[in-house]
Length: 324
Image 1 (cartoon, rainbow, N blue to C red):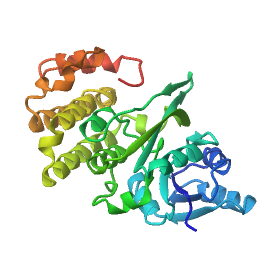
Image 2 (image 1 turned 135 degrees about the vertical axis):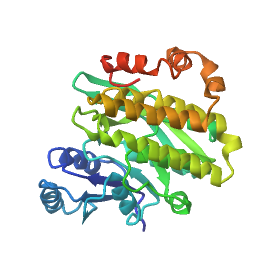
Image 3 (image 1 turned 180 degrees about the vertical axis):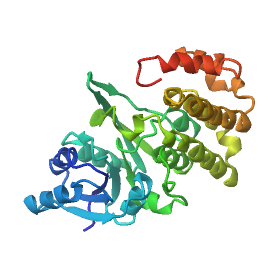
Image 4 (image 1 turned 90 degrees about the vertical axis):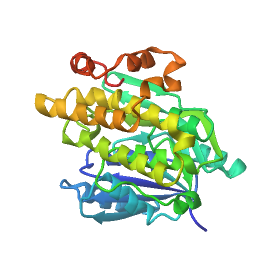
């Protein structure tokens, strides 16, 4: 009998955190799960920690794979090629979840054979934690505009994943955004559980929060998203939603991180890359209907122009908030 849910756990230099992640998976109340752990060329003793864990808990259905380092996107692709469960989940090696997550999500999925089930999650940092609610939203453009582009608070039907004509973009960060925004066009039957399970750890040292060269990966990822929707003749249906996520991405959290790049020349260049992509693909973005919905963020978006974008960058460089 195939596993109920397969959970993919990519690891890179995760020796200090991965045991907590695995403990949360071993404690799951859902039976017949499969855990697929990919050691992505770690340079610390992550592999030794994983092997010791497997030896300590031989009843734990964990499969360890070790490969050369190619980045988290390819680690996820590698994991997808090795899972066998009816549904698939993802959990990062510095995060953890409550024991009833996968039982609850799987039970919900089986009610009507849902393609994806979404839950809430916790942001966790040195100041504490807060719950983030995701959904409900309808499939299609509404989903694109409202989803949190993170993988780990959701489960996905395996046969749906197998049917997709794309995978995680090799070598790029923001691979979860790429995957989910493309998946949006393939979904028609999703469900929500109004409970938080995953504790998403926001470390100041994590790659997601470093303002370095890899922030520029957002350009590659969003160019790939645009290309996919054009080639599949989906631009007419998704134009406004695609335009809005470009606005939110390049003038929101990624703009905040770009504005904090220390080198002035690199900072200016990176901000300009995002600004040029937004205006090249969506030159009339100020007229986007989602910008009219009110709220402080949309007001800010409507205020940004080429002549004042670096003024906002100066403000955000001194802005202490971790997201925008």
